[in-house]
Length: 422
Image 1 (cartoon, helix red, strand yellow):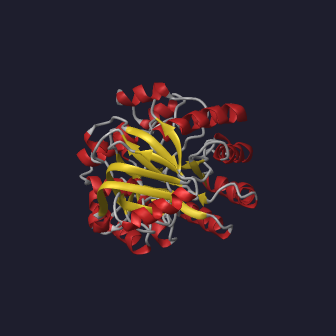
Image 2 (tube, rainbow, N blue to C red):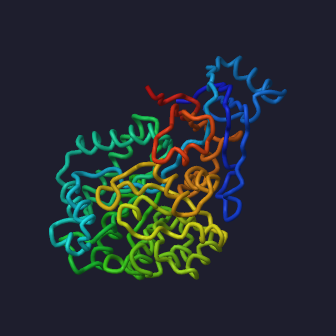
Image 3 (cartoon, rainbow, N blue to C red):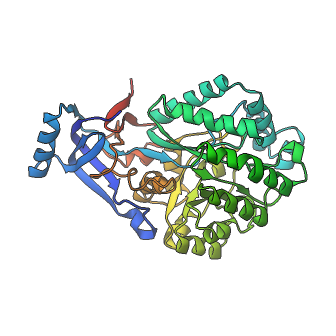
């Protein structure tokens, strides 16, 4: 749906600017406008700035002749729609007991011995019907929209076989057509080693490259390919082989990199010019510098570190080294069953030492860049899609200041109001 829209009486508009990722010190350079207005035509922004002057009057007049809807923001603040660029939101089953096992200090391998981990979700997802996966995915998307997420990435990776991996991606494609949140699909077949390939990670990569990737590509089910590049899962050689094969089939590249040990996944991402490398808790300074030179987005996932009680990724150091940093939720049923954008804002400010402007950029424009969409999403400026939020607050800084609370009052997607808090 595309909207003709005029929004007046915005107390404060805050947005990064640009049509590509913001790097280093640029992340703190956002535009703030008091007493602002937005005009959209055909779902795209034609004006965003002061609610006075000839430029606004001209844009508003043109939109009015097209039958634009006029909305009084009533003194609310406004930011771009959030882009959650790393999630695993389509899955079967739950793992609540593991949350408390971890809280008690149980190590991962002991949880694995008790039947936990990715393998448990794989079994539940394989057993789920398509209708069940659609229903649970639909509910999570509804929550995302209420939190201000207008674009989300979704990964497969809980099938680890041909049929279920394709089903996860097909479910996301179906959901994209029935609700307003844009869904960017990523194939994550090498998320773990399935039981039937236990101890044979290279053989599993052979299977994925030979049997699954071609089907994903020929049916256009995914835009990106991702792999869990980690010690004890998929090493650098297997990861490179898989990613090169995916790129040859036309998929863009992402990596789960250096989350648990310093394996060198960030360096691999740089050498392959991946769009993003994610997690990065243990990435070396040398590999991060290589990512910066290659233009790879560093996607940090503070909710996962919070849930696992791990040190946070050094987003402050990454920005100071000149990298482009994105922040995302990592919503998944194991290590991070959360999609709380409000908590990301709080953790970024309180524990990752990011400014409000840097956090906003990381969750909007740089999130869009991590999905290859910075040219059309992630900021409030002419030429971009009219994806923005009105907050139940007079200042945008309340996103962090009102700790852990959802203050999103209204959500606009392509110039259409898709959510309004009751």
